[in-house]
Structure formats: structure tokens, C-alpha cells
Image (tube, rainbow, N blue to C red; front, side, top):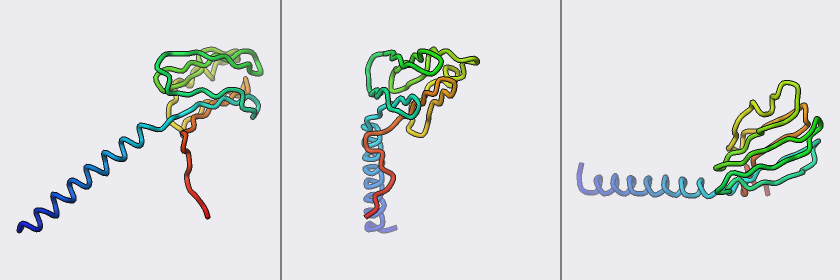
Length: 121
């Protein structure tokens, strides 16, 4: 291995570390919001970047649904349904996760600020 090979390896290493750092920085700055739907109508939009714990109430089909937001996560705390399936689903924090509360007809989805999969021209 000569000097030019060593320069190439070091350059690729520095470039790789920079690219990984850039990806990590841009991934952590996504502003996520939770959208709460009742019978396919948007009833509440909650930013997940809140510092303190907060609770929100939404009217569902069987009664009131209590939603808790804490540390970029969201869950259903309390609801009126026969088996309490909504509150058993637990915390969600990623855009591919969804809470579906069929007895109350409430759906909670997480969306990123720039949630674009593809652009077609």
C-alpha cells in the first residue's frame, strides 16, 4: 500500500463519517405531529415535540377517549369500550405506527413534517 492508497482510504473514511453524521442530524430534526380522527374526520392535531406530559380528550362513539403525550410518544390512557383494547395498545412514536380504536371509531396516526415518499413530475 503506497501513500496514495492511504490518502484514498482516509478520504473515504472521513467522507463516510460525515455522511453518517449528516443523516443522523437530519433524522432527529423531524417535527412529528399526531393526528386524531373520529369517523374519518380530523378532530385534533397534537405536536409530539412537547417537553412536558399532556393529556387531551376526544369524544368517541362510546364516550370520552383520554390521550396522553409524553416525550415524543402518544397513547390512549382511558376509554370506554368493552375490552379496553385501545388503552392496551400502548405507546407509539414512529410514523408507521397507528392506534386504531374501533369501538370508539377513533384513529391516531403520526406524521412527519416532510412526510414525502416520492415526487413525480
